[in-house]
Amino acid sequence: MPHHQSCKKRLRQAEKATAVNRSVRSAIRTSLKLIRTATSKDLALKEMPNLFSMLDKAAAKNRAGFNANRAANYKAKVAQVVNGFVKV
Image (spheres, rainbow, N blue to C red):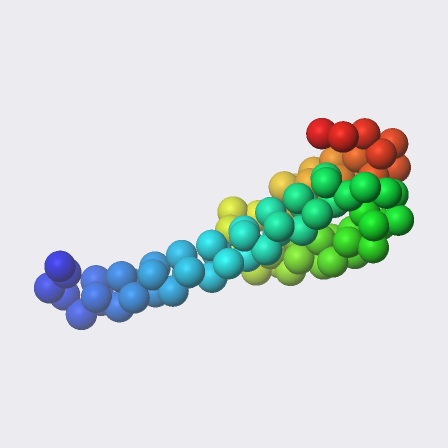
């Protein structure tokens, strides 16, 4: 357990960030799974804006390890899957 006040505060901040990052990552993975397991292209296309929005928000705030390039790569891969409708 930390003894310094600044260390205690940093511990609280880290716990809060971990909880937020876990939530964001879980929501992105759930949306990605909905797209990958979609039975038709229309269902996948309905979920795409939701996923893209979550990725952009995560990248803007640097949440869950997403920066602008990683979010762009995710979006490109998802677009390939949906446009070609190839199961991955």
